Image (cartoon, rainbow, N blue to C red; front, side, top):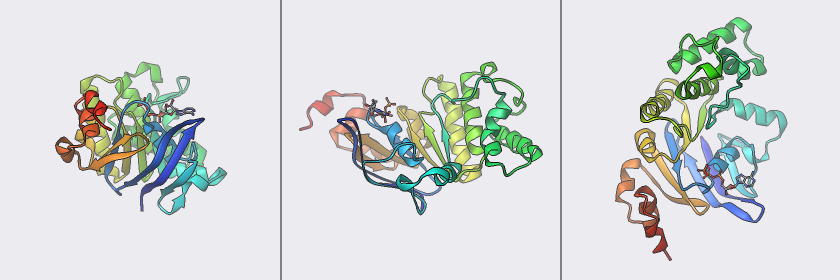
Amino acid sequence: MSIRLDGVVKAFGDHTVLNGFSLDVAEGGITTIIGPSGSGKSTTLKLVIGLIRPDRGEVWVDDVRVDRLEGDALYELRRQVGFVFQFAALFDSMTIADNVAMGLRRAGELSEQQIRERVRESLALVDLDGVEDKFPNELSGGMRKRAGVARAVALRPRYLLYDEPTTGLDPITVTVIDRLILRMKEELGVTSLVITHDLDSAYRISDHLAMLHEGRIRWQGPPDDVRTVDDPVVRGFIEGKPELWEAVP
Ligand SMILES: Nc1ncnc2c1ncn2[C@@H]1O[C@H](COP(=O)(O)OP(=O)(O)OP(=O)(O)O)[C@@H](O)[C@H]1O
């Protein structure tokens, strides 16, 4: 059980983005999808939380067929699958505590006091103690990103999806976020699916690496193995040498 995409085809108009895409996400680990801009990485995350549906193929989370879910069932799924948005996507007019508490209030299961406690715990987990009453524009980019992670984990999801978690951050903050992603795996036992452009970050955090190219997974395996792959498409990408692609028939 975990996240599984099987033979997924997804087109926008006449542009086929995913074309027979299959991926199994190993339980408890960090799986990272790398690939060129526009190759469909974000599209895969949107499929997993049912924001969009495939034209063909299947999307599974545990024993739930996501591409057939509607209404409340989709909402239930999204409680299990936390989403860390690329630019944190915090509401500027709300305090950090209210941002982190949003999903908890919507779920309506905890008292206000329990919510406050859970918000405090979630912020502590990302090393953001004491910022409850601040507004997003009072935090640095890296802190906002951490607050976005706190919001995603507040509901104690089984899965965390990260959309470009290190884009636009300085190298030190990238390391902080990488460590945070690893910590969420170790301390909460969540299964993570990450999409990124950042190869160094991908090597540091991943248990399993998958390269997306022309609508499907071109190569996958442990990150250490990628350096010895012969496929010129994979080599071209990881070495930043597009000329290797031009030689591919
Ligand atoms: N809702 C949509 N309507 C039309 N086209 C879309 C839509 N969503 C994505 N696309 C197109 O699908 C392609 C893949 O987009 P996607 O965002 O999944 O790629 P990506 O690999 O995440 O790219 P990047 O790394 O640049 O974020 C792009 O060409 C994009 O323009």
